[in-house]
Image 1 (cartoon, rainbow, N blue to C red):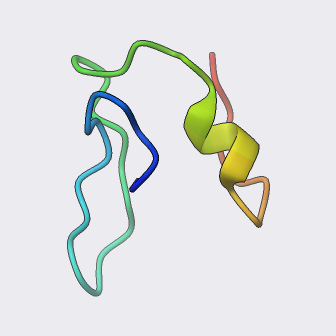
Image 2: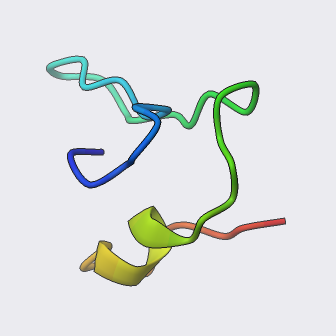
Amino acid sequence: AQNCPVKAIPMVPYQKHEINQDLCTRCDSCRVVCPYQAIEIR
């Protein structure tokens, strides 16, 4: 979320992080840094 260049992943405490598809440019930055490989770009 912190590395997203367009801030498409809002950080909300105690909630799961969801990607705002309207803002996402599919740059792959979030997937590259995710320590759990939990992000899938479609």
